Image (cartoon, rainbow, N blue to C red; front, side, top):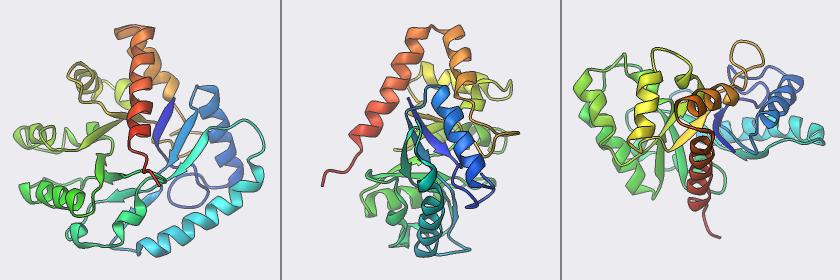
Length: 235
């Protein structure tokens, strides 16, 4: 099972605060059936360069590597890139794709969107031959005007929901509707710690199995994995 969105690297952002917490998060994820996990630490292009981010990320990975001796998910490195005006002209942004793939996880701004934002993301995607994945789309529903939010699903992007989207009454209807309309391309836990925002893939599984069936959960997770593998870059 794939978890496309997580913050388990130690001391990278507002996620894990220690290598011990990171290992506990990885063990918990594995117990819940996660076999592949993507580290997507926050990246803010107005605050640091991709090069500096990558140096910090490698430092965090180096701290964790000596502890990776027990059963844990396969780790891929990426970033949760916060949208900013001009992102389509940043030649360094492609460095932040998920390791070994052409997938770039983008966090949309928590303000009212404009068509210009979509246009710039489309330019980013095609200028650098990327495939954009929009993070936790369920979070934007209450912020956007209805017609603008509806436009989101007309865009040539992949859409990721958090596991929490299926357990919250505010977003469950949307998340299930995305499944019904084949609009859910990836799921992630967006886990940040072991307390308030722990790995929670099991919670999404229970809701989806109850609504549909255990076989539907297996079908979905297999589809997410197949899509991820399809977008691995051939060397």
